[in-house]
Amino acid sequence: MIKTEWYKNGVFYQIWPRSFKDGNGDGMGDLYGVISKLDYIKSLGVDGIWFSPLYPSPGVDCGYDISDYMDIDSAYGGMSAFRDLLDQAHSRGLKVIMDLVVNHTSDEHEWFQKSRRRIDPYTDYYIWRPGKKGGKLPNNWDSHFEGKAWQWDDVRGEYYLHLFAIKQPDLNMDNPLVRQEVVRILNFWLEMGVDGFREDVITFISKKEGLPSDRLMPATRGIRFYNNGPHIHEYLRQFRSEALDRFDCVTIGEAPLISPEKALDYIGGDQRDLDMMIQFQCMCANCFFIDYYPHPFSLRKLKKSFRTWQETLDGRGWNMLYLENHDHPRVVSRYGSERLRDKSAKALCCAYMFQKGTPFVYQGQELGMTNFKVTGLSDFEDVQTLNQFTWLPKGLRLKLLARASRDHARTPMQWDSGEHAGFSACEPWFHLNENYRRGINVESEESNPCSVLNFYRKAIALRKETGCVLSGVYREYKRRSRRHYIYAMESESESLLVVISFSKKTTRFTLPLAYQFRELTLRLSNYEKEPQGDVLRPYEARVYTVKQQSSR
Image (cartoon, rainbow, N blue to C red; front, side, top):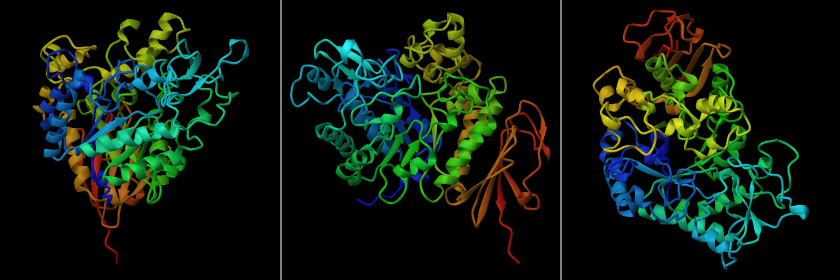
């Protein structure tokens, strides 16, 4: 199979299925709803859809606890609805990417139920260990979601490893039978016509032999013994050779704590394991390590993340670009300003849309959706959120969770200003953000040529018509500025210059010296009135195309 690398020219739209559009009137999003909105998705100018998990699941982690890898949850319409969706998306020129979650399954998966009963060949499909003397756990590793990483099972009489929720036992990828199951899953969906996979925490699937205790890194003990583990490349190459290389598809690996240099071990060279990696540095500009540990937003930290990935991967690997997804609060509420929502949403669009790589837009991001108003702990649904800061006083805990919960990205899509925001004919499964009544919805923004929605359309169109975004070199200017982000994509034939203010006040700036005496054509601006020379208004963003200087 010849790999065409079609994804390099594309822009993708991520759908969180239970919150996108309810098509059958039960209050939860489904594939019928997605099918009804395919023309809307296509109108954005995107080339494909990434679906968060659609498989049957008990729903402990919103679908990331899978009980059957080769089916579609009946709540979403089942396999017939998915086949219809696949056909209709492809007929519109839209690729379809599935979520591949193979670090762990649901504890309700048939494999786990047989493994806990020691039924062959499933006995060693998971990571089981007896306790140590004195009733101690097999090691001191921490779970990312729920306490320690080990849970006792009365049926088996042993502990099983769970790096995430208790009901998400880790698969034993060292077992060749488990790896063959992954190959079977990949081939099943690819043969059906799926165009690739986003691979969930894929760098966690190989654990260090012996599962040693960790004396370092409190709260995340053990991560150095399973992130980028000893056999990770061997296993990924097996998946590629026995399944992925048979199809012209794309693979995107989620990779917590990955550096750009380490990422090249996965996505560099002609025989790469993956095509792109989802890194987390760009989501750490207002937190330490994860969203729940806050610090004030730092533009310099955000710029450094963009810069290091652009420069390190240039000519050696391909970037996956994003500023919002299902795992983080809304980016306007994080890095922008809810008071200046319109302007800051557009500025944030420009901050990443014109870099080299493949951009992803998360549902509602194109509307400038914001975090919802949290009134109490009962407002949260997410298993990760509910297990954070349980030792803190209620008021402080609520404040921290209200700032950082992933639930903010999971409120229903806002389609119009009518009842239930046009998402459903009945009460939705989760909270609606009340600002849908104030114009933050598709219907209102469609009719406003200056809306965030129409700005995204213009930005995506401009990206696609400007060749230097794909072929040029990233240059960043005024690196030390705490208020301005100025970068360019420069090629021999053309350049594109992006100037953005991250200030809530009017500021002054100077063009980079390399552009002061060149002919600049303003192609995109988030203000209706003409730019004011060297003055940048609050969250002002300008995108220029630049003629190359003729040689003499």
